Image (cartoon, rainbow, N blue to C red; front, top):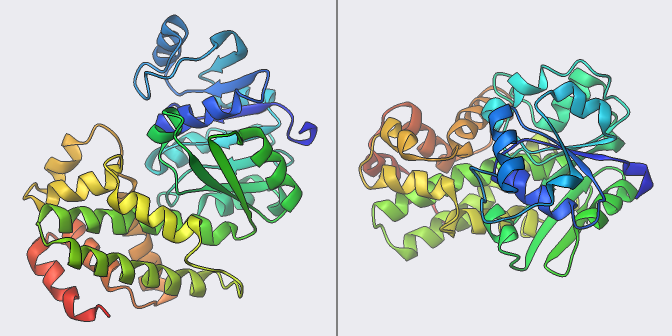
Length: 333
């Protein structure tokens, strides 16, 4: 564990909070960056995150809180980045410290805005981080179930197997099992796409189209995901039915904890996109991911992705959900 050194959690949302709780089982102390000082003050006062997963208590004496991203980077050897993708770039671009030799673990389930880049590629390109020090956390795993200590599984992706095993050891427990993978890009792109498909699942559910059609949509979604990742990041031994891909898709498409499903469900029930976004208490990553993946696919990948196109037409072209869903029914097999 020594190679990973001191750990800093970057982010103050539900996923950051769940990961911090996991890390504190095996770390004496952690550094925790949150953007807002008032949230830190409330956290210290009440000994829990005042906004997310507030039932989870912390020993705040073992946490060095900071609202200075560069202080967090200076104090830590490993950065666990769990920021919503829409805010990632504005916060990451504030880093002036040299982090090129640090481990960076991405728990960001989205594309970097305006960059059309997955997070690990962004850290490699902008901060000079080496591939063998970049990791990614994949599902299937909801922060809420981690907080409730329900049996959960996470996939740790890294080109350096030893590094991923060390990080897995920091978060593993009787209730949290870990799986090791070298498919960093595939896990990241899969995490973005499953949010897109979860929105579609929510739309279908809100429209009351039925379980039979939902099952067909999910079956076709995983094949669509496979077509995309096999083109953008070829890997001969990738198995799309593994938990980091199919498992993460299933839990996000069907779970009541899935904000992307709930967002889509409101649209399927007749909410406008704007009204559904205003109703959501947390960010629906798939809304932003839909546009990014659509543009990546249009401009450089060229995979056959009718479900992605359907969701894009609803969210960004103002197409009626009924009309958009009807267009894809004959594409399923």
